[in-house]
Image (cartoon, rainbow, N blue to C red; front, side):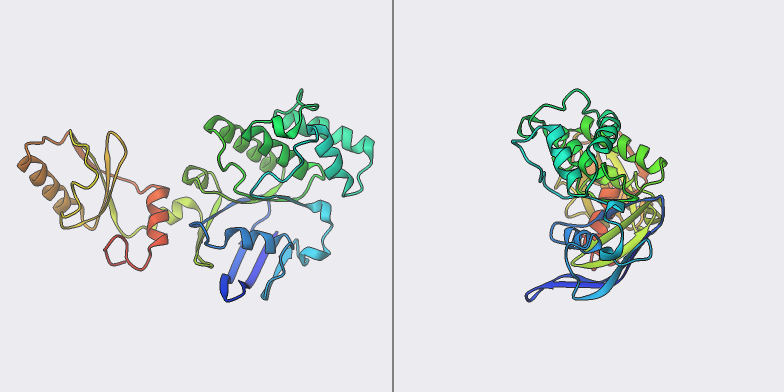
Length: 305
């Protein structure tokens, strides 16, 4: 459904996207990950035809973005870009009118979409009076009014409370089950695990494109999860073999090269300080740890890749 071939874009002397190749299969959900400034928004805008690439090409359903039926592509930008002084229904009417949809068709589709997004009953509320989650649902409703085959979303749940994020993803899954192809960027690693495919971009280059489970298998280090009566995230900084340590309030996640030697060193260090470890077990890498590893792929926290 989406095919990017050697996409490149610079803004003056600053390269934003460097030779990106990406394929998004029909009826899939692909998540685009990367640090701030990695090129995610620029890539999505080129895919939607909002920015012209310096070189390379995009095809949507086998055609350049400017050649497809505009109703087949839905785009939701990173920031709420609708009108705060218009009501929910007035925003939808305005957006749909840009596509030349008849009023009766707009009403028919809006009723269905507002029910699906949980905005039914709020048709007359002004956009500026909506909560953050409801604003995002309104933006999604406007993007869906044309019933697109491809939906592109730029960090659609950023700054939204956990319950609203969960509701938003339920909507996305329902749309995907109905046959919609979805490409989205997200800063949340738990959302990345909900995608069929994850594409990681860093400094404008696409580093990895694979299902989340497959990316986890490529992690070259091991993870030890430690529980101990200790609340110092820097306690293990000087311990050999510990590449990185993260503290989560009641446990530590330690990135190590080798499990048994690292476990033994940890026990010795803790006991030398009069601390008894509650448990030291190996765990699977999380998407957060994979994100950090990919962002620092030339040397993960001092360790060689």
